[in-house]
Amino acid sequence: MDNFRIESDGGFPQYEDIKQGIMHMIKAGLTSMCVVLLLAGLFAACRMQDIREAELRIPALRTTECAVIVSNSLARTPGVMADTMQVDYETGSVTLQYDSMILSLKNIEFVVADAGFAVNNVPANEQARAALPPGCRGDAAAAQ
Image 1 (tube, rainbow, N blue to C red):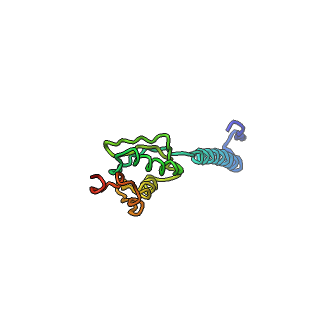
Image 2 (cartoon, one colour; image 1 turned 90 degrees about the horizontal axis):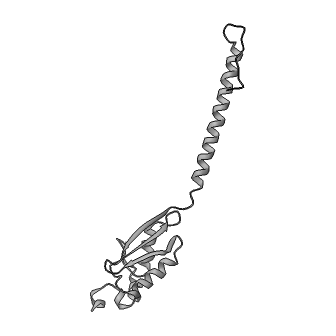
Image 3 (cartoon, rainbow, N blue to C red; image 1 turned 90 degrees about the vertical axis):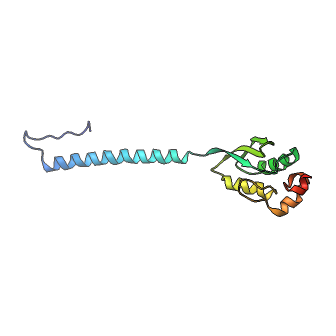
């Protein structure tokens, strides 16, 4: 607004002066709005990762052999940060971090289920489960 001045003959400003002033304010406001929208769009596009932590409850996860099978399946999954996996044999769970911009928790659960393990509320793939070592099948007959 520093380069805009209304000059008049001491009376009221003329219609053209008012119109010019309004147009100048509109142009300045639109330019500012465009810059703000452009910056907001750039910042939204810059979001490349959304790292989350998940706990997978896997009841049949009781031995190192079972943990290796689950870990190998998860390590081959894009978006899972394999170096963050922690196995707890007492609770039968795996805690890990993953990038939710690449996959969801449900995708991770299906990877584990396809390896033959029931996880959270997702049942095991029965063909894969039958191919697991007996100690990893999680059934009463295998535990004896």
